Length: 179
Image (cartoon, rainbow, N blue to C red; front, side, top):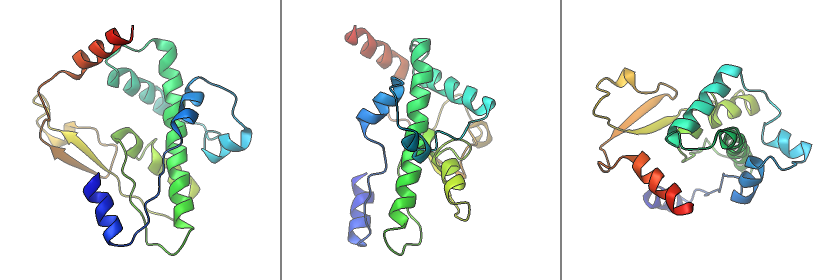
């Protein structure tokens, strides 16, 4: 992200950390008590439809190659939602610091989703604002048509594969080392 940060600095634009602290995300994942005002600040008091929540759980399972214990999946979903709420709140707060004509959030594809990620929280917090979400996807050998890629953002940016390694093999090795 260095070139993006440098371009912002060169243009004298502010850089704002948007994610919630890692310790807070871990506490959310462990379902530790959270003050009601913090729950509201992170938009966790806003229910997610059953379909979107089931989709979020499936994405977490798949992105961890089906290797997470089931009890951890719901906990990670809570942390994901808290991060979405925190990033949206940081964007709104940063916009209130001074006159701006928008901002850019650099985040992962899950957080960029318009149906349940940061843009959906922003739509609730600032309904007058517009968002444009872009996701980067590695081209996959078995998916040949752009329409067959997830359509949860405004635009897809296709990139070359970074390596031929199976990410699930890497995950299995990582989990084996942790044990």
